[in-house]
Amino acid sequence: MRLTEKPERLRSLLRLVIPGVVLLYASPAHAADVTLGIIGPHEYDLPVDFKPFNVLVQYGDGNAAGSTYNSLGQRQARGGSHTWAGMTKYVHFRSFEAIPHVGFAFELIQSESYSLANGTDYGGLGPTIVGPAAWFKPNAHSTFGIQTFMQTPEGTRDATSPHYWSNISSFIFDYEWEHFSFDGDAGTVVGSTKHVKGAHSYSPGVVFYSNLRFSWKATQKLEPFVAFDWQNVTGTYDNSAKRYLDDSNSRETTLGLGLMYNISKHFSVTGRYSHSLEARNTPETNAYYVKFVYLW
Image 1 (tube, rainbow, N blue to C red):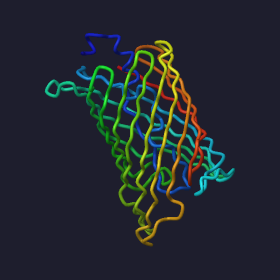
Image 2: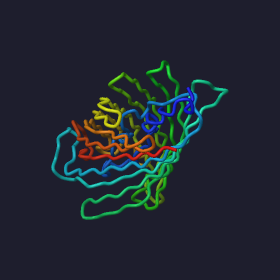
Image 3: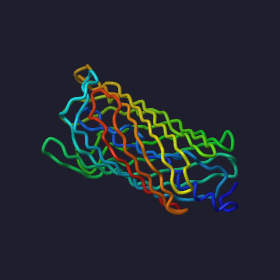
């Protein structure tokens, strides 16, 4: 069904945004949010057979990590930081008559970040992220697809630059009931070798992640939801010393509650709070998330 045949479809399209990714670091000294932890409900409730349209999204999140988890999974009241991150994203959606019943999207994302820790503060633009997504609908109530993104190695300053290329790929899914919705993703992040002049070279750990969202369609405008996020990162390998860095592997599971508010057929706001359930070798998640979506 084409958008011009059913204008009320625009309301649901406010929820259709292939999510961006967080800036990833190889070093456990940096706070790291769960990959794609910024997604909201209906993130993958995507259409097929539509005319091209555009979406502009602004993501924001802040994490007041007063504690960290050690290698034994013990929570310790030290080594935390306050971090703020944002992503400005443009997405172009389209389908092709030659490839019926399949939807496509292309994203251009600019990340921003600011950190306050150990008496120092710094911020700036992070890497740029680009990539496509494609999906189909096994039936009228479900969506299944794949997305893949490349993240550039440099930001505007050293502290916001990972210094290596990375690929973020995942399977995406969504299922809609009359009063409930369930969607999510599962994927990996793989990085190239990190080279810094005058220093050792490193192979970043492989990231495995999953994000699940279950929502209740309370009204046409309000939709509360539960968020579950999980991430596991393998150890960083020092190619020069030929060994893994101590405590460079990490793991985290978080649980959160949020609310989506569809202000109009062209604009929506989603907010959420999440906290760590368990973790290892990472600052705790004590974070809030906000997402603004504008469709035209």
